[in-house]
Image 1 (cartoon, rainbow, N blue to C red):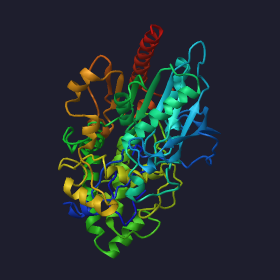
Image 2: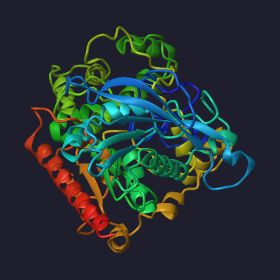
Image 3: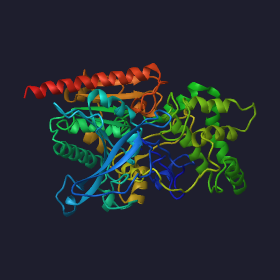
Image 4: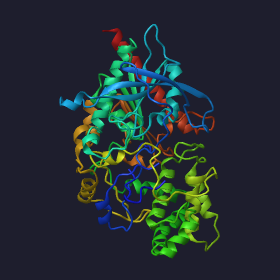
Length: 531
């Protein structure tokens, strides 16, 4: 997928999710030392079409839905959930006339395994990312897998301004008058209000709550535990780059990690990808060259700029590094196990002297067309089928994650400027980023010393094949703020449904998570019994 040709790309989730999330930054791109638009990787790129139309009845409404709790390649068993709608307040923090405006916030429930007596079982709540909530439910099979053991009720809450949870009707929105209510703090307050109301409605006020989240959702889960400890007594934050702000994490770390993933498979693979960018620029510098490149890349329409082809390759290599899972999966695209290795095998299979562009295109085609059903590729224009439209606003207001590409990377070098980024956001949205707001609101600097004295009951899980891991918590902070790190793990791999082909280290990581959660809940129940 490519961004609209009218807007240079900042690929930030997104969660995760992840299907690029595009943040316009025209001025920033123009000032970049690279000839290409400045890139940032996808946070949590995700997406599925809505499964049904909204219904409403009082403050709650429901409609039956069925979806798989994991990718079809992972688990053939379908897990049912029901879709509900909660009338949520627009603004939790002011008393202006618009603050009491109500909108329908979508959430999904699965009560198949919920234990109601003698005491209510826990609520396992997924804090939704920047996309439609069905996608998170269908790709977080871990919660379905462990629900029977805990007698848990599963809840997946959609993030405001994504999916069907649109406060001002169908989007997309472009004005600060509407998007101004799209913030992480408002989203966390939404979760708190909905969870509290749901527990009352279910007569389960004392039931323990554990929040789960991956990527941006993992950031929200960890922040929710810190901000609302009276609502959630624990959090499992997978692949959550909460340290990707300010100067806490080296700005080059993300793309250095992507590059290392490919280099670890094949030095030749790394060198081919590193060489392709200048060749593309050279051949795409005139109309004749663009015609030939469009044929080589099987573009549905003749591309207007070589940048579009660079973006297409860039996204394929970046996303594949993120989802370098040890088993086949279709979280973002239909991919084989260890797709980075498979990409490099494709490149290395070419004879000596083969065209570098042919090699790079063939490798990227694994990402876009592993199933073999694509006749041509949309390189420019296109829509936003994954419901990620709001991420551009978030990246231009508070989710400012500085990233650069170093000379050691397989991508062409570029720098980052707060000033240029600010000018681009002002030009498009009419707002300037609050570049240090996230660390002001949630912390991050010297997090080990701060949370050791303040926080508790958080699991930070990361896999080092995931480039987002560099911005995550990789060491234990205390006896109850635990970092579970796997050397070969990818983007929230632990949240995927278990399969018979899972490596032992994934099985062990999940086992540790379950053991820790048991400890939290056991202690919570003891405390409740003594009240």
